[in-house]
Amino acid sequence: MAGLSTDEIMGIALEMAGMHHPPADSAIYVEGTGLSKVMFGIDIGTAELLLARQLGCDGVIAHHPAGGSAQLNFPEVLTRHVELMVEHGVSPTAARDAIQSMMTRALLRAQSQNFDHVPSVARLLDMPFLNVHLPLDEVGRRIMVDTIGRHCESLGRPASVQDAIDALLTLPEFANAPTRIMVPVGAVDRPLGRVAIVHGAGTNGGYAVARTYYEHSIDTVLYIHVAPEDAQRLRSDTRGNLIVSGHISSDMIGINQFVAKLEERGVEIVRMSGLEQWGTDQPAVEEANIEDAEPEQPVVAEENSPLRLLEPIVIPATIETETGTEPEDVPEPAPGTSIRTDTQELPEVNVEETSSVPEGTAKLPSTVEMDEDEEPEAETPPPT
Ligand SMILES: [Zn+2]
Image (cartoon, rainbow, N blue to C red; front, side, top):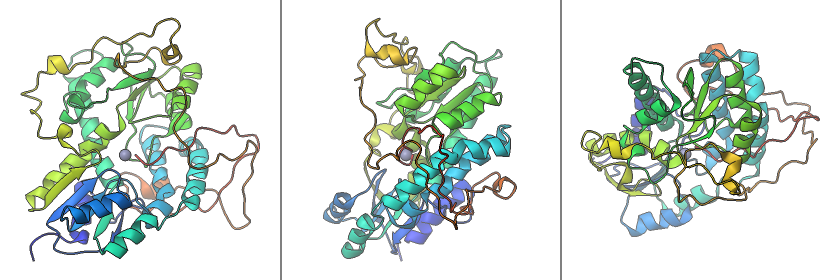
């Protein structure tokens, strides 16, 4: 039969990432075979499923978890932060401590969500539907690591933060991105030093994970996005650099590789929700004028501008400043809230067993505990 099955589509992504099983944040919601025209978006909801039917698609792929086990078990993939930290020289104990608060929030968020809303619509439409998250982010992370490493090695001198940004801008996803790479903590002219590319771990590690890297001889952390309040806390009490590369453009690095594989197999991809052509089919890097693609001079906020709070920062002159924070759909536990059950244990991450490539083998942490004296941190952002 022409076309691919949902299993085959998932299998292609797993093979690209060197994984043997779908990780906890990726799932097939409605199985199907012979898919030849597939809608693919970073975020898929009920309206998009209907649109897919209207456009004559015979399947839908989302990047971010859209419900079911991918949403319920999403906190498992946060343990990938521990693996990444340990690979960068952080002790396993410090790494586990750094994700405790984030894990607690993710577990509460997962439990609060209507995990079956979108999948139920796909079932009623009989629309084959899956999401592929961590495998594609892992592919993107490796590309970013290689790109920055090769570029900085070729310089013949110690690299600066700006050099890493220049390296990223050789990737079409960044060179053509409507968003800009930012440095909300540290400065572009500082030495790059030791770098940690923190992508492909469910979502960014927030304040605690970045601070832990800085405390363990990592000079520069790259997140693909960060909550403003986390950036501000890092600015106030750390000395590291934080590069924020941009959520959608960063997600697209792995997604574009995957789309190319699907198209090689004869599947027509209907791009939407972030997959529009700005990330591909643009002039290749060799053709693009890299001089033009380099960031403009960092914009330094005026003395009385609200941007002062995040200065120094590489931002486009036209950026709209938000005075609020990201919308939160889960109420924050009150400070000092303690949530504990007799049967639950704190998340344990076996670093020895889960080192290197994530294979979806992490055990779902079963304890939700918040220290009484713990200062609440920013809401765990949605999956990246
Ligand atoms: Zn994402």
